[in-house]
Image (tube, rainbow, N blue to C red; front, top):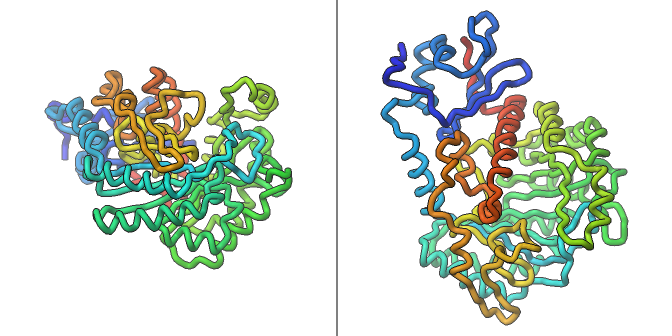
Length: 454
């Protein structure tokens, strides 16, 4: 089919980059199609990029698919109104309630790069009862059809009794209101033995993020007494792999990279590939260590850390290099509305271990605007609706109307950044991350790309 470009145009929601072979990697951020256009040096197109001229070399079948998946759209399509519609349906009328629960601020580790508070707080049963009532009220008001809980800390498994208690209570609520319910947990994995894993799975915890030192001799993530944790966590992961036969769970093994670990990336990849690379239930996340200090008392620790800090791009390059061995689930970062931060909406909360009701689960300290309510030890709940309204945005930022990445972040990728007026800084890193993950995914042997030859 010949495209009449008087009637059609390229979608402004197309995002593209090149892989190391010069192939074009294309995604449409609304339809989420992934296309690899194989480099053809014989074509008289310089530079080799997505354009009407390039598409004119595609056959009718390919062009029909490009129209089907929104890479090519009709001229009459008002893509500004598309943004408003997406925002309204996905953000304003979202039917999923997201709550991060910190069971405790305590931790059995003393990680060298951790700046999180270590107060002796555990949520008690009274507070969990009040939280159930809070969730019930939100369901009544907004008609939520899904509730997602993410367990966090401190080390959440230190509060296992609370997890079990809350899980039983919310299961009763689920039966009454007929909503779907799922959980994830961010844990250091030290206490995640088989019995604990089975119990968590029974309570709908199906996604796990477990951080581990990259190699046995590295001691960044140590116990409070300074002893290494690697072997115990590694053994727990292998026991789960060998003894849990069901498939409906996912464990992300996260390695926080310092300069020292970056230099030993080959060793790290080979070790984890040999043990977990062929088990689809295990995937990987490589993240640079960040300086999260904000208090004067953290100054010396932050100074010592500076020499080990690396750039996010350094870690992305490692994932690109080894994307054919380890599964980084890069495609999940390219999904429509993949953004996991709902702090900038009425659908997301974090419950601190001291009972504070927060909007952002990262800004746990030093950000007074984050606290919108509290649940005291007796289970009495107070909530400040006026303060929460500061976090609820009725429309995207003005500049988002010209952004091809909008359907991924929805102008809510960081509610705290919108509150602070620094969203532009977040945008730059967000966009680069999308381009990096587009390339990382292309190197996965089981990638989601549709290959097109010209």
